[in-house]
Length: 162
Image (tube, rainbow, N blue to C red):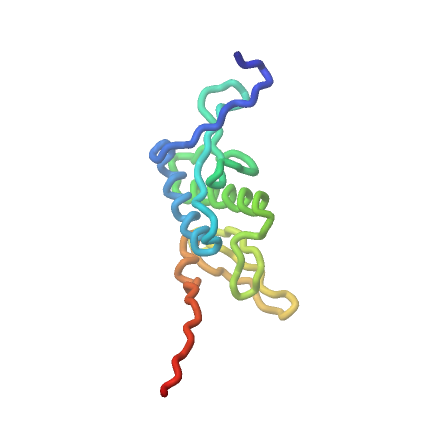
């Protein structure tokens, strides 16, 4: 028996339930994988609407089901750009607040970046280093940080020729 004050049970959103958000989250997860490789992919989590209406509120959550921030607003007219913007911001809120770190970081300036639309696509924007008078810049499109990050290669000992 449940009471009025029982918290609703979250459900793991299945692939295909929200195709635009799935596509957007796949791009964001590419950036997460390359910048925080120890983290498992983010996922969508649904909770019944609190107002008693039909439907559910969908959140971007860590792999363990924890989330932070507001739910995703339904994308008007199925616009992929709006979906990507909403998912990117929700993912950044969840990662930043629950892992207690800025994400993603600009490798050049070691500053947290923010999503910003530039030339018709959503990109990661860095404020630059004000102390060195370096200008703000676009680092990469959301989902494109993998093209900028060099894979870590272990140091190999050189053999001496004998």
